Length: 558
Picture 1 (cartoon, rainbow, N blue to C red):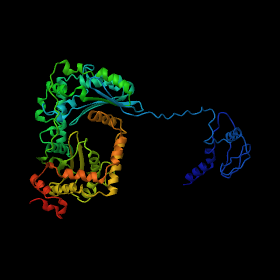
Picture 2: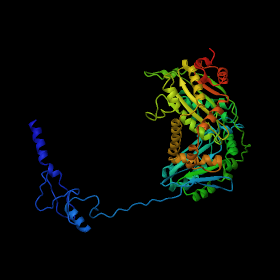
Picture 3: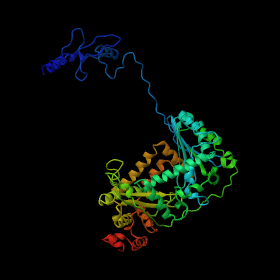
């Protein structure tokens, strides 16, 4: 203890030395003011700027006095350093430019500062256009993106080229659009445009690549079946129920039993039919538009596309209008395999209940987006942090009040000619009748008067999500490509911000009443013994407003 005490006293005695200011190379006297306030002989006293009074002096005299004091205020430049240079603010234009080439190909871009850019292609192609083809061909084409081509005979050459420019690539196929995208340094734009053009128009589609694509698809399907989360599977099933055997009801995932039927010739025939210039948009963010147009003319010439070089014959593209049918798709499945281990996954049954909504061309499309935010929902445990979406109706009315509901999430699916609004939910099998009744109640509540605070919150949240998502360069690229593909032009976020502001509670009511007149769509997966029959649900819906019943359990026959 004495040794520690002596060590502390030694440190305290040497403390003034730690406070001594360093000397500048230019020399000068250094002040050393002790804790008693005495001034060392031969130095100038240090004076506080808040209490000092001094006669008027020139700026040079003041600066010299400050330098002599040994302490340099922040408003005095340090000796020997150059004056700083500041960047200037540039008020550039960030308009979106769209150019239509003589071939019918459209090129769209938006400038954005930075060293990186995103380029890509949006094609009017997907599962809904597979009527004359083997179902699942779009899924196989997605897996064949950015493989060998005329300009890149092996994968190594592709990887080296992309690594040189810090690039990443991806291809995705949805029901109505196939997207190819590359993010890269701007300096690599010509090289990556060549790679993009080859990936879209000049793929080799070797036997080895086809075998790899089939294996990847089989693994993806198996993973979907083994995963406890079933939202993706249920959404596929409810699309099949809503548009039975037409357009949007075609499966987005290739079925295992039909995968061997998708040959190289079938793929080229599909691409010959749908990969035509008027169905393709080249879009980019962060590049010069005139350069993008010139590169598109050079690398997106369909005359040397693989299917044209090999003389493949296509068919007329399927332009059928989506016909909403409503219906019921159920799959009995036991999820016991998920309950192994010390912390078993709850044994759940999954379902979705949907009604016909509007297309993204309809005047009620923006109200449908606001309604989707109002309904909100999610899982029992939010991955976005505490409080995410807690004010939405599916949280306040369902998840917070019914302990047996594990998930309740609203989805608004809008396409060019049809749409569907649905609620996905999961609960233990013994609660499926109560869950169905709960979802029907929530659909009918949509037509009731909306609280102003709830309504305004939903609109602000939708606007915030829109602007936040468009901060991402890849998201903005895809938004530009999809809009130009659907409308022929691009609407900036400000237009949608104003449209959201113009939505009224009457718009929500009009939309809800229109939806409630449609035939419901139901998809269910799991143990379904307690799930009401489709005929009972239809009958309950035809009886009128189900909220008039005090006991919803009386809707369905025992």
